[in-house]
Image (cartoon, rainbow, N blue to C red; front, side):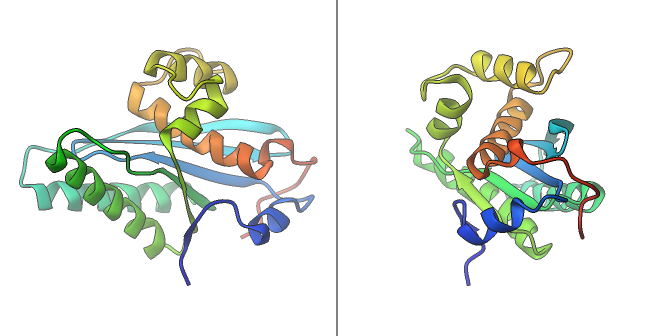
Length: 187
């Protein structure tokens, strides 16, 4: 059974439980810089929890992939998200860059699946459309909307903002931002 999907009816039903609060980690994969953003949705609406970037050292490419895997694994262990949302691969002009991006994405997905988390994929255009209103939004526009939606004091770094945008997109897709008041997160 595949863990990668878009919103599933089973998840939608489970996510609407009155006492449910859910954490979603968004991932913007890259071979040198992988953005992450963690949001929580529940009785208090949408809340920011953490964001940043996994910066890989200038080692070999397999070493950088291992760093991404370890970094995502550590984030999952530290923050205990319920679901993962990740950006889909887009067509790049440089085939070598596209392959490297796909491999970085693959190790991020592998880390999530190894921790038993469902993985949901979103196209960059869909994320931008949902957040900004246009699929061709600039990085600055995405950063601004993330800052506004999460009531942040400043704009997050661009890759972290993209990851937060992916997490917000997933929350909105499932209607998680409209949870009824709830209690503790079930585990």
